[in-house]
Length: 221
Image (cartoon, rainbow, N blue to C red; front, side):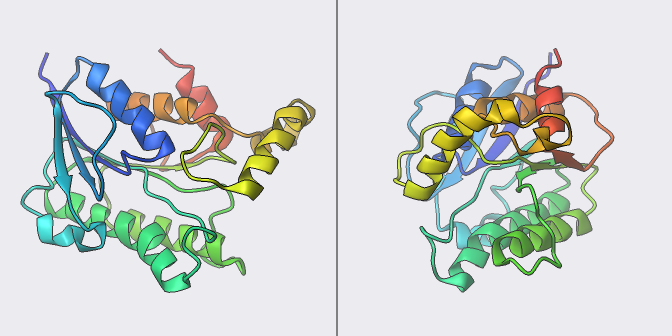
């Protein structure tokens, strides 16, 4: 079995850190390149760290070579209140990563977006996510998967009071969301990671993948 090299952007975050652990333990992967501002929590001979300013990702084109790229980058307006900086994170980094995939002929690119992403939305958050999706799809990477999860559960290192309260509400309310409302149920990052790994190793026809579809894919063997 020929082992692969993966790149992770956002490996210090909630979903990205779980993904890193899974790929380190997966025999299909020989090397995991991590581009980040800070060191990751995991130690392994498989991990190759590059501590960089992610806003300058394009300067590292020669290092940005792999079989697959997983983009788990994301911020919040509370953490990044300046709209220009917010856009640089949620639009700029994924869009640049997709350009580098195209330039370096990397055939698989996955990015975590959000439910409600819409470039015509009057809501800034949704509009930026929608514009990011459009920029990624423009690169026409053969295996492009844009995951659109609902609220992501799990415990983060940083404090997000509103998100914490909403997650507690969702723990009670998720079972009430049935039928067409199921798509609004919160989703655990491990489910997202399982789906991403499946998509990286199996063909899938769709580019944009809803929260419910993420669950279905994660259950596949």
